[in-house]
Image 1 (cartoon, one colour):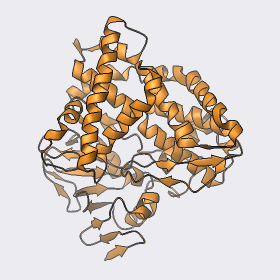
Image 2 (cartoon, helix red, strand yellow; image 1 turned 120 degrees about the horizontal axis):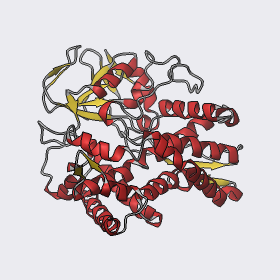
Image 3 (tube, one colour; image 1 turned 60 degrees about the vertical axis):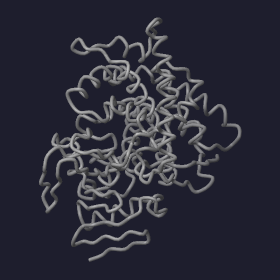
Image 4 (cartoon, helix red, strand yellow; image 1 turned 135 degrees about the horizontal axis):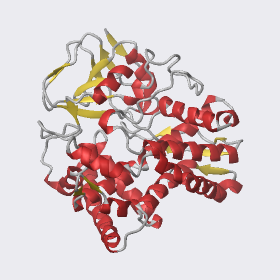
Length: 416
């Protein structure tokens, strides 16, 4: 049986092979229609455009995120996370940064790096940032409230997380536009269909970003301050400190990861709430309602839809799916969050659901280290936004960026 929808999707049920351009605009704007069709047919499929098996069931994604037979390190393959195995000499600076990234490493190196960084992101440390995030949210709204309209991605969703993570690290917040530029150019390496131009741009960004942070790390060595860069310079785990390269890569990772997904999730959440028809005053009535609303927003429209892992041995995953060492698999976080086997009324936005859980921060040893910070930023900023602007509504239909497997809005024009 072959399934064809209004997207350019072709799915052969017998072979479970999917043909779907991830840049197809119907899919980019609403991947959930495709996920629902696939959920009705299978729990796994071979995505031709990516060249690997993808898993969409909540339980299977959760299990495979924790399966230590898979990992992020390329141990058995010269290919990168997109399966590209061509000459990478023009990416030597980008690859040098990635070599020391805890996101791309496995134990014992991953354990050491994460232990050194984790103390800054535990919930009790992050909670101290609540007043600062609230003040920042109010200050941003003060700038545009009297205009009666705003473009929330640029005016609200972006400044909060990039300012918070820059202040945490101890780099100047006035450099935020440059930090965002470097980040966007580097993150483009993880998107489907990148080209030589974007690769050269990512490599140049890695050079510039590293140089910027080395300068500030040098200042913190001679003049330590109460910031994360100073903490990382001083931190030790089992007597071992971060090397210079590990320090720079970790700072880049925290800056990139510390804002990218939160910007997307903020925009997605506002869109979800406005389109739901629910009264924001009820959704953010108190701390419990606010937390539940944020968790449902994370489940309902996640900012990251695929997380890839490499097989470290030949693995029989059942249902005639066998992966060999070096092969990748795709774990579909956004699809798993809408699995009808895991959630009642899975395609409905229900902040009061009792089966609340989500895969949006991943699972296992690579569970998002910044999850407590992201949750706090979302809870505080969204409550302030809807408290201050109770009549907020979309001025034009929101559109998502063509950046799968990231999932975020190009712009979010609103009025009140």
